[in-house]
Length: 126
Image (cartoon, rainbow, N blue to C red; front, side, top):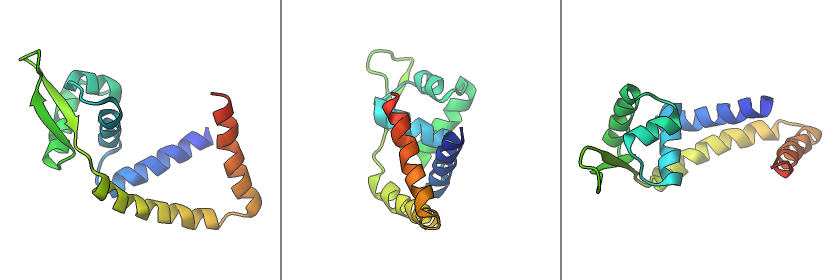
């Protein structure tokens, strides 16, 4: 449970550094990994209602994270496409990783080893 809380905290810091909410970052992750989605599909993946996903998509489009195009086979719908953000994301990720490195370096050797063993053990169960 603590491991999940740590991952959530790290994700929240990265989202903050990118000037995104956690929901916006999760939406970008889904679009990046899954490809284009309708607003309804994206809302289902992010667990947001249609009333909440529309302004989220509008904010992401205004900041250049997504592009909206008409749906090719359903003229009543649109598709949301992720726009690659690597230069913007990589620079900000280094800030987060720098803070992460500083906190890891304050741990004892035993604590660092335990921190490596836990995710490895969890990965073997998958």
